[in-house]
Length: 396
Image (tube, rainbow, N blue to C red; front, side, top):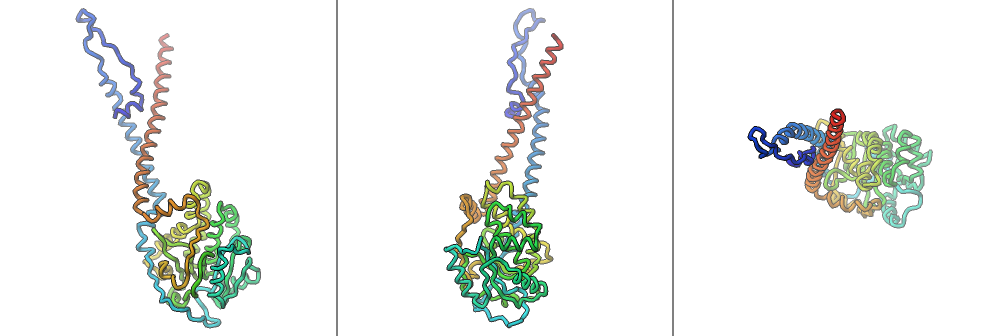
């Protein structure tokens, strides 16, 4: 505990001279002053400081475990919750019967900042318009008449309406202001445009249902909705799995008012408030956690853990190869920042996360302990110095 005694003020002790033995009749020292007595006096203080530091360390570790519990559970329960079990037969979708009711409304949602489609997305958008050529394609903001028709269709539980809806920032803001006004301020204050694009897809899938596709997705053939609507559950949601855990949000299919998306739109304000202050310091992880794939993975995880059994027919997970016959993901990743590559590399190595976390926690605790001891030693020396001066003043 030499370092501890130094931090507590033991390093500044003075060197005492030998004490003369007056009874022996000479000036020779009887015995040297033993510093052991000083050490014995410090032992209670050292033990107390060590106990306090241990309590602080335990408190920090427990707090970290509580804060990171959702992520730990996501990694630990990934196989139970997000193993891809949906297999499609890669056949062309059968035509819908006119006027038939469907669990999943035949609506395709996509997002873009404005009505001008970027050149890099023109071809992929064209492919989706061709594959879904029987759908009405709206390349504009949501019009009041179409909005009323969509709301009526979802409210009545019918899905005879088929349309393709391109959501611009202006149209999305109008939609939120009309239907979810409490979220408009948060939506407008997002630090990155991709966060607004992420958020609106959860709201429209909850409100209308249908299928959402990123603009950098090339459509090969119509998704076979009938094949995933055959079970007894009225709530159906389909997600694409991703590595190292959870699901992604570049393709999502859902029935209207699905409970998972109910939780998603309810949790968006909380995650926004929690992540807004450090957005500029870690853009990639901030986007992922506030509204991106990590956000929806945590929400779906929470929803599944409320159910009596898993896997649940209300949430189906499909692997990316299982979608090859229907879509091709061009993976433009336009929102990735400088920190994205490092975090994506770590994302494919979950044990690296755990190792770095353990090492970082250890050195972090060491640094905190050192700073606390230094602070305590500084104030202890000041108090001792002040006490000595007061005694000298009284003697004088």
